[in-house]
Image (tube, rainbow, N blue to C red; front, side):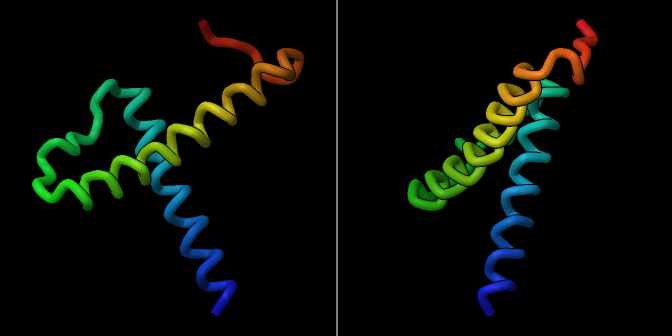
Length: 73
C-alpha cells in the first residue's frame, strides 16, 4: 500500500512538472480562474506550484555545474 502511494505521489509530481515545463516553453498556462469552486481552485494552484518548484530547483542545480551543462542562449 505504501509503495502505491509513493508511486502515485511521484507520478503526480511528474505530471505537474511536465505542465510547468510546457507552460515555460510555450507561454500558455492553465487558467485556474475558470474553476468556480474556490477550494478546488486552491488545490489546483498548489498542485501546479509543486511543478514550478521542481523546475526552479532543477534549474538552480544545473546552473551550479556550468562545465556539464552549456547554455543555448
